[in-house]
Amino acid sequence: MKLRIMAAHQHDTNCNEIWLYFQAVINWVKATFPEYRKEMKKGLEWGVLYNKYGAGKYDPKALEARVADLMQDEDISRYPGVYEYLLSGEDKATERVLSIRAFTPQAKRAAYERQKGVCPKCKEHFGISGMQADHITPWSRGGRTITENCQMLCDDCNRRKSNV
Ligand SMILES: [Zn+2]
Image 1 (tube, rainbow, N blue to C red):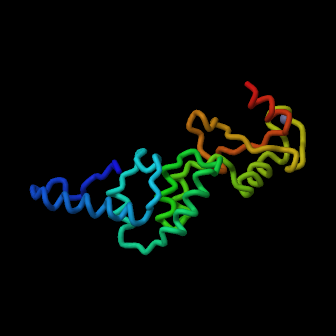
Image 2 (image 1 turned 120 degrees about the horizontal axis):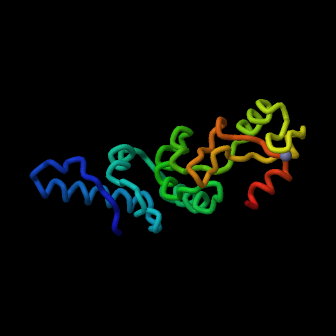
């Protein structure tokens, strides 16, 4: 298992101590997430996660079920974030590590009310069920999935936009 571990003790001269720390991190990861996935070595600082969450009590079986579940979620665009999200107890503030692509119903409703139900492309009025949420700054260019970056487009304009 090759994982990125940044040692908290990297300025210590005692190599044995660093080695023990690395072992502790690796053992903790293996015990907490026994199922190895390639996402585990993508840009995750396990040392940092260990320092933050290492003392917590986790049920590896329940975690594995959630990992398997979330790894299939199409709205998540950053799968390695799943590990930190689960360790945090699925904390709302940690949700950003998943980079979620889909707007919440609340964000859609807020955008709809802000536009007074008018599609910004064709200037026509629609019911909320006839509109789709769209990233004002495109997702592909780093636009975030937050209320401020949400606009509601009518089905036709949305289809036209996604075809270009
Ligand atoms: Zn329209």
